[in-house]
Image (cartoon, rainbow, N blue to C red):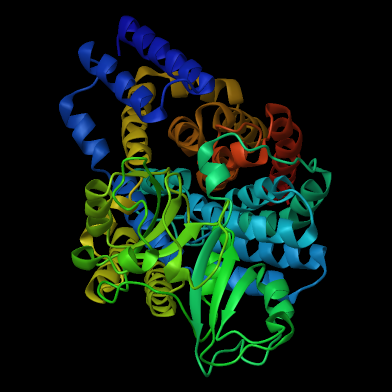
Length: 560
């Protein structure tokens, strides 16, 4: 490539790095801008762009996102984690078990999906331990990222390296190629993350928006089946174990708070949003949800505007909202005084309603009744059937991958099974894809192609002098500034030039996933930053501990 074109590539790369570090422009827009400049200067061709955008890493990542989110939305992992957090009384043992589960699952699921699933559990544990969620949110995000390195499909960077190896050699890497040293990093990382949980400050988060203020707790109603696991338990035991508050019980009896729960009872419950999955997963408790499309429900929080025609209506008049086939399964508890059943509660201006139904029905209901949708957060109704099918589909994908089948075919099979069993529908499939990430991966693959052809990679290879230590260090620095995708795109080709390219690729995989020292290094850390009020100093100090750990284990793999 001519020197002038090489200069343009370097300038584009430096500017994109600065913009990514500043975090002022969304990463996918930066990627699109970089590709546009390279195209305008004639450095890349349209055919290169289409080839990279439709490449194996992009397609595979999209499929993995869908599979992960389907498992996540079933609530089955939330339920399992909630059972562990209730059954194990010792905080250290409980966290160690949960960290192990999250770390191992992250090898097969998106770290973002796992982090989102663990947010309600973090709040549940914080309430149980009388501590701030800040003690648990970042550790769960860290362990999700730490674990997502020991399979070739677990992270964007690993998928890129998987494709790069195939392009160079004509052979696919085994599914568990990165398990040594990846699995040892996960296991060794658990005590370190436990230490981080101990060291993190116990910050009490302030209410900063009307969303948080209004949706602190909901009122909902459940019917206790005769075979329910809660039959025979006292009210106080029920409240303590599941982290909810029973406001009323019907049929009423004298001194009702002292009595046990019977089959056929109707419980009016006050609960935090994160406890909804727990409540819906209790055997024999029935929430009111629409009858149709029961496998693929959405939950949305909506704000009752002053001009809404629902104001003054009782929930019985709108709970089964006619042609929309939606249900109001909760109403914000703030300021509510209860004098009867859930259905008798009157809707007021400023209330927040928790709606259950299909996306189309909820959207129509919102539009017709002057309701304001609030920013969506992770809430799920537990669905054991959906969870079993989705996890079974993932197990088939893992088996096929381990048997040497192409990753796209393996995970594509899981996707087809989910669609065929109606565990997933087409509209959900498109919604589950994180399009900005796919755009960023595709555009950075284009930029990486230009960097390789410009000679920048060759220059970096000369600087590294074939040293695995320097290879890890430079990859980790890039990962914490421009992200794991950019670091894998740049450093992967350099690793192929090492005397032992397979070991070098593993080193890059381990280092590219060390995105712990900055909040913007990966989405999982960014997701919990606001909720835990974490500072840049927090990420730099505690994240460095995990980077040092990963470095030590990886170097042991290389030299021992």
